[in-house]
Image (tube, rainbow, N blue to C red):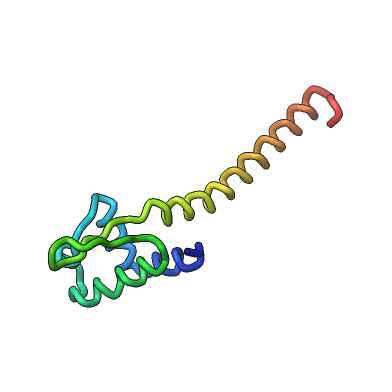
Length: 108
């Protein structure tokens, strides 16, 4: 999975809704489709895109397939986002330390 595929998959509002519904736990396509403004086959196509992006997995359950969020794929997105957060915190820390050095007259 690449982050680009994951973000592209989640850019679609219907796919995002399907993904968010899976946050509550594994569900079959029929239950996922309930209440959505698209058909059950359309939900299946959205799930296919989410699966190809590494965001969901599926398993057989009798004659149906049950989908759930793939924690590994979600973890890769989080790691990518955390990298930016870590860089922002480091920049903030450096700025605060520089301001403290200026106030106390210390030289860096």
